[in-house]
Length: 153
Image 1 (tube, helix red, strand yellow):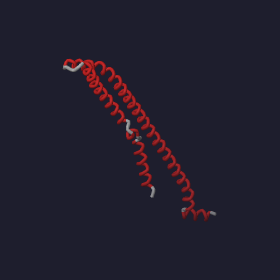
Image 2 (cartoon, rainbow, N blue to C red):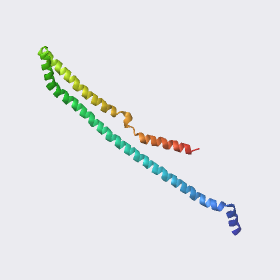
Image 3 (cartoon, rainbow, N blue to C red):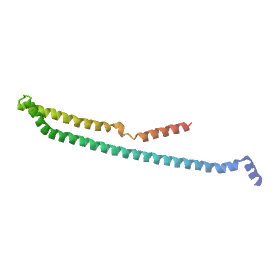
Image 4 (cartoon, one colour):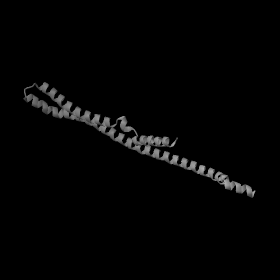
């Protein structure tokens, strides 16, 4: 029995086989812990980006609503107030009062509508699908995939 133990220790098979499973077990535990930590970090990054995206979307939607309200309110009020002044100027220029009122309303309405339309279009562009993507999360996942592929022979 002592001779058998000496032979095993001289060849190293006893000491290697007793430590290998522990080292392999530790390696797999570390791998599982790292994978778990990586997934948690990716989820946290995605949450942060989605939260920022929701905030930005809400802000742009509020701006769009403000643009619509400005468009409607401004068009009504300015069409009535400023068009009366424009009509008065057109009457002084020699146009018939009915034609002057019509042109006054048309000119002021067109200018106010243009301003509201431009505000609406700008906000709509800010809400494009490209701006809603969680870009950093996607880049991180691609980088992790590339790293993992480089480690696998």
